[in-house]
Image (cartoon, rainbow, N blue to C red):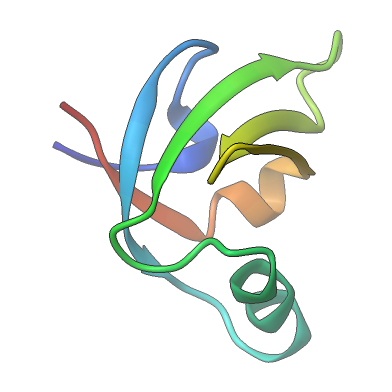
Length: 76
């Protein structure tokens, strides 16, 4: 099932299928290691839901919901 990363709940995992967007935002996401076929796990959400903490390649990142909405993931 294909979803965007912002739709995943804490504890859920997915595999990146596509990074949308353009310009500096997409470049920043790709520079952080979020590329096709990368496994991502949502660790937790901030109290108001933004930002979200994710685990990518054994390190934790924080992303805004608007950035996470640009990342398509395939869930198991």
